[in-house]
Length: 87
Image: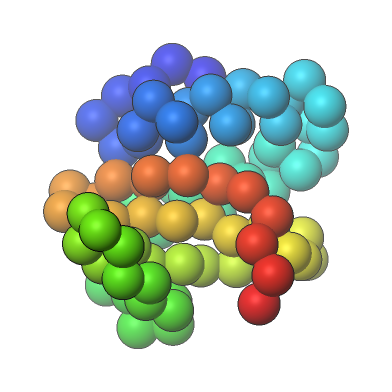
């Protein structure tokens, strides 16, 4: 995946890795990311917030893919990372 305005370099690399390891997981991750980018207000209401040294990051689970989460910032919005994260 080529990084663009809606994805950090880290997220783009993680998505590229998922594509080579498990194409089905990759598609589920991309679907979640694109849904967040298309309607961030809807997903913000259901997301958990994590406070980091860089600010607040939202955490949204990937449906049917526990423990995978999408981490995103509301600025933009922008997908920051995707990886398994315990609830």
